[in-house]
Length: 312
Image (cartoon, rainbow, N blue to C red; front, top):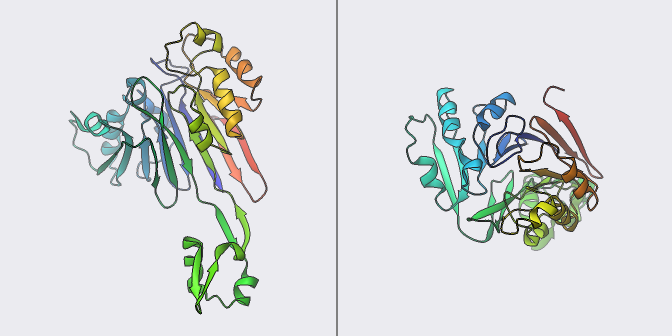
């Protein structure tokens, strides 16, 4: 099982060339998920060569400009490049109005807008699932968790012993049970190996939220905002953001394998103080730069995470 995470933009608030605006692209199988889409993010998408006509879903954490201003020119660019496949955009109330209002260029492909209203829920794509959890921020905001399904290999010896015909095995995997000869047979009995599906959690802009941390439990990667150091946040207590220290506490509660800090304020020319602050609590912390790629692979026993730059 293999996933790639492309950090297209890791800054926030206003554009800065070395950080970029919020957008992180997750490639799961042949599907691309974009976590937010700030100004200029189409440049990163095209530079990573993620594909003009691949299945694409864009998740807006909230509608502050630094997280959404790149979407309209990106849709127009895809149209100019002759995309035909639908683009799905998921976000809070008024996402449809924001995306479609004054979208003047004729678009060559369908756009599906899914607005979410509940405090939390699940959107099932079949080959991937999205959990959304409402986040405490200045406006309506959501955190997201992306999850691939577990990869299960059935034991052919046990299947043959119980005379389970091949055409019923897909149903067994999908439903978790089958009925055969007036008996109910459950999937667990026939599993030879199970590889947990890769799980990636994204906080968006938020105060520390332990409901999100619980949902992100045992994630392979937790991408969490760390706008300020804890000292600077205490000096600005009305700012609805998290410090690096608070993000690290969330990561420790979630028992994630790796914490990536993003949305670091542009006031910090040197991000090492935030990294040191977080690592005191959660040592497995990184601060990715723009153009960072993270490869995540899993097998029955381990998760392997490899960080590299675009040029490598």
